[in-house]
Image (cartoon, rainbow, N blue to C red):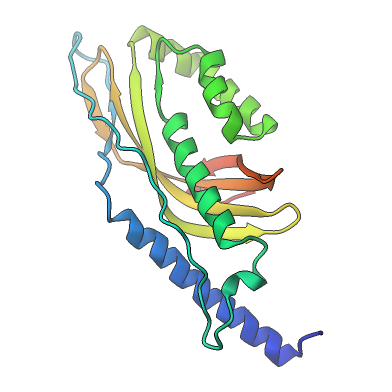
Length: 215
Protein backbone atom coordinates (compact mmCIF):
# COMPACT_ATOMS: atom_id res chain seq x y z
CA UNK A 1 0.00 0.00 0.00
CA UNK A 2 1.40 3.46 -0.93
CA UNK A 3 2.28 5.72 1.96
CA UNK A 4 0.92 9.25 2.18
CA UNK A 5 3.50 12.09 2.10
CA UNK A 6 3.08 12.52 5.84
CA UNK A 7 3.74 8.83 6.53
CA UNK A 8 6.73 8.87 4.15
CA UNK A 9 8.27 11.73 6.13
CA UNK A 10 7.62 9.88 9.38
CA UNK A 11 9.29 6.71 8.06
CA UNK A 12 12.30 8.73 6.89
CA UNK A 13 12.71 10.38 10.31
CA UNK A 14 12.46 7.00 12.06
CA UNK A 15 15.14 5.53 9.76
CA UNK A 16 17.51 8.44 10.38
CA UNK A 17 17.06 8.23 14.17
CA UNK A 18 17.61 4.48 14.18
CA UNK A 19 20.74 4.73 12.01
CA UNK A 20 22.19 7.35 14.35
CA UNK A 21 21.62 4.96 17.23
CA UNK A 22 23.15 2.08 15.28
CA UNK A 23 26.23 4.14 14.41
CA UNK A 24 26.63 5.12 18.06
CA UNK A 25 26.39 1.44 18.99
CA UNK A 26 29.19 0.51 16.58
CA UNK A 27 31.39 3.36 17.81
CA UNK A 28 30.72 2.49 21.46
CA UNK A 29 31.57 -1.17 20.83
CA UNK A 30 34.92 -0.06 19.47
CA UNK A 31 35.97 1.23 22.91
CA UNK A 32 35.41 -2.16 24.53
CA UNK A 33 38.70 -3.48 23.07
CA UNK A 34 42.28 -2.31 23.20
CA UNK A 35 42.94 0.88 21.24
CA UNK A 36 45.43 0.27 18.37
CA UNK A 37 48.74 2.13 18.36
CA UNK A 38 49.29 5.29 16.29
CA UNK A 39 50.91 4.81 12.90
CA UNK A 40 54.66 5.48 12.63
CA UNK A 41 56.42 5.76 9.27
CA UNK A 42 60.12 5.41 8.47
CA UNK A 43 62.47 8.39 7.98
CA UNK A 44 65.82 8.26 6.16
CA UNK A 45 68.55 9.57 8.44
CA UNK A 46 70.41 6.94 10.53
CA UNK A 47 71.54 3.29 10.28
CA UNK A 48 69.48 0.28 11.09
CA UNK A 49 67.34 0.39 14.21
CA UNK A 50 64.99 -2.13 15.71
CA UNK A 51 61.45 -1.21 16.64
CA UNK A 52 59.30 -3.81 18.32
CA UNK A 53 55.91 -4.38 16.77
CA UNK A 54 53.13 -5.37 19.15
CA UNK A 55 50.84 -8.16 18.10
CA UNK A 56 47.52 -6.91 16.77
CA UNK A 57 44.62 -8.65 18.51
CA UNK A 58 42.03 -10.18 16.19
CA UNK A 59 39.18 -7.83 15.43
CA UNK A 60 35.71 -8.81 16.44
CA UNK A 61 32.32 -7.45 15.51
CA UNK A 62 29.49 -7.58 18.03
CA UNK A 63 26.25 -9.08 16.86
CA UNK A 64 23.88 -6.48 15.50
CA UNK A 65 20.34 -6.84 16.80
CA UNK A 66 17.23 -5.38 15.17
CA UNK A 67 16.59 -1.79 16.23
CA UNK A 68 12.96 -1.26 17.30
CA UNK A 69 11.14 1.99 16.55
CA UNK A 70 8.64 3.71 18.79
CA UNK A 71 5.82 1.74 17.21
CA UNK A 72 7.59 -1.59 17.76
CA UNK A 73 8.60 -2.06 14.10
CA UNK A 74 12.14 -3.06 13.16
CA UNK A 75 14.27 -0.57 11.24
CA UNK A 76 15.63 -3.25 8.90
CA UNK A 77 12.26 -3.64 7.18
CA UNK A 78 13.01 -0.28 5.52
CA UNK A 79 16.67 -1.00 4.72
CA UNK A 80 18.15 -2.99 1.80
CA UNK A 81 20.08 -5.24 4.20
CA UNK A 82 19.43 -7.26 7.36
CA UNK A 83 21.10 -7.14 10.76
CA UNK A 84 23.10 -10.24 9.79
CA UNK A 85 24.16 -8.51 6.56
CA UNK A 86 25.41 -5.50 8.50
CA UNK A 87 27.46 -7.69 10.87
CA UNK A 88 28.97 -9.60 7.93
CA UNK A 89 29.83 -6.38 6.09
CA UNK A 90 31.48 -4.94 9.20
CA UNK A 91 33.53 -8.10 9.73
CA UNK A 92 34.70 -8.06 6.10
CA UNK A 93 35.66 -4.40 6.52
CA UNK A 94 37.83 -5.09 9.57
CA UNK A 95 39.49 -8.10 7.94
CA UNK A 96 40.22 -6.05 4.83
CA UNK A 97 41.64 -3.16 6.90
CA UNK A 98 44.01 -5.55 8.67
CA UNK A 99 45.19 -7.37 5.52
CA UNK A 100 45.43 -4.21 3.42
CA UNK A 101 47.70 -2.47 5.93
CA UNK A 102 49.76 -5.56 6.87
CA UNK A 103 52.64 -6.33 4.49
CA UNK A 104 56.38 -6.98 4.29
CA UNK A 105 59.20 -6.07 1.94
CA UNK A 106 59.55 -9.83 1.32
CA UNK A 107 55.92 -10.08 0.15
CA UNK A 108 55.50 -10.04 -3.64
CA UNK A 109 52.58 -8.28 -5.31
CA UNK A 110 51.18 -11.73 -6.14
CA UNK A 111 51.25 -12.79 -2.48
CA UNK A 112 49.79 -9.47 -1.36
CA UNK A 113 46.96 -9.74 -3.88
CA UNK A 114 46.23 -13.36 -2.97
CA UNK A 115 45.25 -12.53 0.61
CA UNK A 116 43.06 -9.61 -0.52
CA UNK A 117 41.40 -11.42 -3.42
CA UNK A 118 38.50 -12.97 -1.41
CA UNK A 119 37.77 -9.60 0.22
CA UNK A 120 37.63 -7.24 -2.78
CA UNK A 121 36.07 -7.02 -6.23
CA UNK A 122 38.15 -7.84 -9.31
CA UNK A 123 38.34 -4.19 -10.31
CA UNK A 124 39.42 -3.02 -6.85
CA UNK A 125 42.02 -5.79 -6.64
CA UNK A 126 43.64 -4.50 -9.84
CA UNK A 127 43.79 -1.01 -8.30
CA UNK A 128 45.37 -2.28 -5.07
CA UNK A 129 47.94 -4.38 -6.96
CA UNK A 130 48.93 -1.36 -9.01
CA UNK A 131 49.40 0.75 -5.90
CA UNK A 132 51.44 -1.92 -4.13
CA UNK A 133 53.81 -2.41 -7.07
CA UNK A 134 54.30 1.28 -7.95
CA UNK A 135 58.03 2.01 -8.10
CA UNK A 136 57.81 4.95 -5.71
CA UNK A 137 56.22 2.68 -3.09
CA UNK A 138 57.83 -0.70 -3.78
CA UNK A 139 61.38 0.72 -4.10
CA UNK A 140 61.65 2.23 -0.59
CA UNK A 141 59.74 -0.73 0.89
CA UNK A 142 62.40 -3.17 -0.34
CA UNK A 143 65.39 -0.86 0.10
CA UNK A 144 64.54 -0.03 3.72
CA UNK A 145 63.19 -3.52 4.49
CA UNK A 146 59.88 -2.18 5.67
CA UNK A 147 57.40 -4.38 7.55
CA UNK A 148 53.93 -3.13 8.44
CA UNK A 149 51.40 -4.55 10.90
CA UNK A 150 47.99 -2.91 10.63
CA UNK A 151 44.45 -2.92 11.96
CA UNK A 152 41.23 -1.00 11.45
CA UNK A 153 38.43 0.51 13.51
CA UNK A 154 34.96 1.32 12.17
CA UNK A 155 33.92 4.85 13.11
CA UNK A 156 30.53 5.15 11.45
CA UNK A 157 28.29 4.29 8.52
CA UNK A 158 28.54 7.01 5.87
CA UNK A 159 25.89 5.78 3.44
CA UNK A 160 24.12 2.77 1.96
CA UNK A 161 22.35 1.96 -1.28
CA UNK A 162 20.41 -0.65 -3.22
CA UNK A 163 20.86 -2.24 -6.65
CA UNK A 164 23.42 -3.58 -5.88
CA UNK A 165 23.19 -3.39 -2.10
CA UNK A 166 26.13 -1.42 -0.72
CA UNK A 167 27.34 0.02 2.58
CA UNK A 168 30.07 2.63 3.04
CA UNK A 169 31.89 2.69 6.39
CA UNK A 170 34.26 5.34 7.67
CA UNK A 171 37.27 3.37 8.96
CA UNK A 172 40.42 4.42 10.80
CA UNK A 173 43.53 2.51 9.68
CA UNK A 174 46.45 2.14 12.09
CA UNK A 175 49.92 0.82 11.22
CA UNK A 176 53.12 -0.08 13.01
CA UNK A 177 56.03 0.05 10.53
CA UNK A 178 59.55 -1.15 11.19
CA UNK A 179 62.50 -0.76 8.82
CA UNK A 180 66.24 -0.10 8.67
CA UNK A 181 65.42 3.55 9.27
CA UNK A 182 64.28 5.07 12.57
CA UNK A 183 60.53 4.89 12.98
CA UNK A 184 58.50 8.08 13.08
CA UNK A 185 54.93 8.53 14.25
CA UNK A 186 52.19 9.47 11.80
CA UNK A 187 48.53 10.05 12.65
CA UNK A 188 46.03 7.29 11.80
CA UNK A 189 44.26 7.73 8.47
CA UNK A 190 40.50 7.68 7.98
CA UNK A 191 39.15 6.00 4.85
CA UNK A 192 35.76 5.54 3.25
CA UNK A 193 35.43 1.80 2.56
CA UNK A 194 32.53 0.79 0.31
CA UNK A 195 31.32 -2.81 0.19
CA UNK A 196 28.86 -4.44 -2.19
CA UNK A 197 26.84 -7.59 -1.63
CA UNK A 198 27.56 -10.26 -4.22
CA UNK A 199 26.49 -13.90 -4.12
CA UNK A 200 25.70 -13.78 -0.41
CA UNK A 201 29.09 -12.30 0.49
CA UNK A 202 30.47 -8.79 0.92
CA UNK A 203 33.43 -7.42 -1.02
CA UNK A 204 35.22 -4.08 -0.92
CA UNK A 205 34.58 -2.18 -4.15
CA UNK A 206 36.16 1.18 -3.30
CA UNK A 207 38.73 2.64 -0.91
CA UNK A 208 39.64 6.29 -0.57
CA UNK A 209 40.50 8.89 2.05
CA UNK A 210 37.32 9.82 3.88
CA UNK A 211 37.69 13.57 3.37
CA UNK A 212 37.56 13.02 -0.41
CA UNK A 213 34.07 11.56 -0.19
CA UNK A 214 32.94 8.41 -1.97
CA UNK A 215 32.30 8.06 -5.71
